[in-house]
Image 1 (cartoon, rainbow, N blue to C red):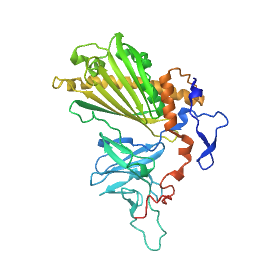
Image 2 (cartoon, rainbow, N blue to C red):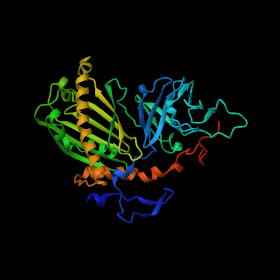
Image 3 (tube, rainbow, N blue to C red):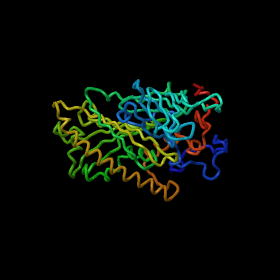
Image 4 (cartoon, one colour):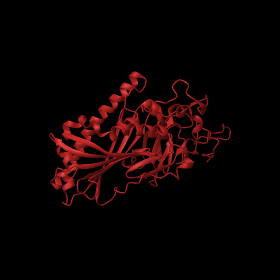
Length: 394
């Protein structure tokens, strides 16, 4: 079955951005790189430590600019990054107590986006807008998550479960990097371990053997057997796989899973009881066309029995992982440039695992045109509350 045969068909859209009952007459399919990340999930948009008390941080999800701030109570709030008055970014504002005040005319906003004060407003002045959009926000795993979709679904949507995070058996290394590519390239890169030739300078010669893979409507999982067959292996790679403390050069079993919209990787050395490390990653689109994403990663590394050994190994592991990530980023950004130049996806994929993950990403994503056109889907577009009444006057 070819990539075109497996491609998902999205309905065409009418002028309002709503799906049309008729498919695209031209192709009947959609280019995966034109599929947006579905907003009805929790997405990390900042490191918790970067949102300091009484500070405002500018971030974004798929072209929606978001202002994060930590109030006096310690809670983080997420607001649409524009003042309803003159559209000046609220990320330029000042935190006072648990409110955020615009730097221009000092309009003040509560954490839910409702206006709490306009200092100079009089009875003769016009009726002010109700406020701006407020996003559901939660902190977990050292990250700030927002829910950019339907706020009514936020409470019933779980955060990702990371049992190794905070476990006394594991120590976590956190990553936060911008990558100039569509998020789907990142999913494909991690799942397709046949690209180890790219990393030959740091891992030597690795032979990945796909043991099995399975897929369902929301996920794809693959198990590989990794065998080191020669060449010089970076010291950080050996330490990360626990070879530096176990004194072995074993074969490793790696399990990688895309469970929409997140991705995980577990590496279990031969004869080990638990993973030597566990990776959780999220790829958060930044721009409206979703050709740039921000990668957040949590690498949870098993602590060896020798006290302090992991602390000594930490700089070597960090340098190794940064180098591997830099090589992967080089490749996926090159893929994105090719797509930009060609105006379409001309990939000729033959690996069934990657064809499966592409189908999962298509099926669970949203057409980019619908997101770009959809002021009507946001809570507030022109300073007034939407029909859902999500932001009543304060």
